[in-house]
Image (cartoon, rainbow, N blue to C red):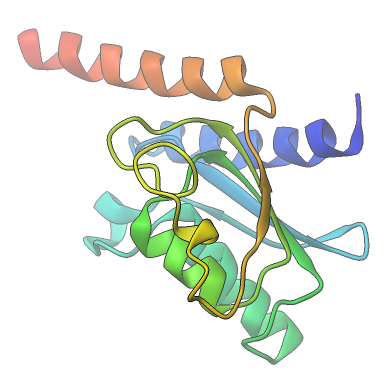
Length: 154
């Protein structure tokens, strides 16, 4: 297992916490100096807040831990391609690298629907790698939504 897979497995653990709480299973970790400094998972239903995405929660925790909004030496691992809000927060917090698992064909804003990190007018451009543990990340989401649909049929 390489380093990227190691940290993505930690993000998957966070996604599974969300799953257990009947939240959309998306998890995130932020790594600095080869150590996790923040973790987050989706809490939109729990908090009834539209911004309670895994990335937003992890970014807030990382900023608090480091006592700065600049996360320039940090890497973010998330199980699903960031949405426009999260991609914007990643740019604004100056995160260095983003690694994600599954692509989001309905709202992905790194590579799939729009490429926010590639807009040359922005003053920060995180590097990114997609497809880390992609099958496992995608399967977790597919299973969650399949179970939701079956529950609604009953």
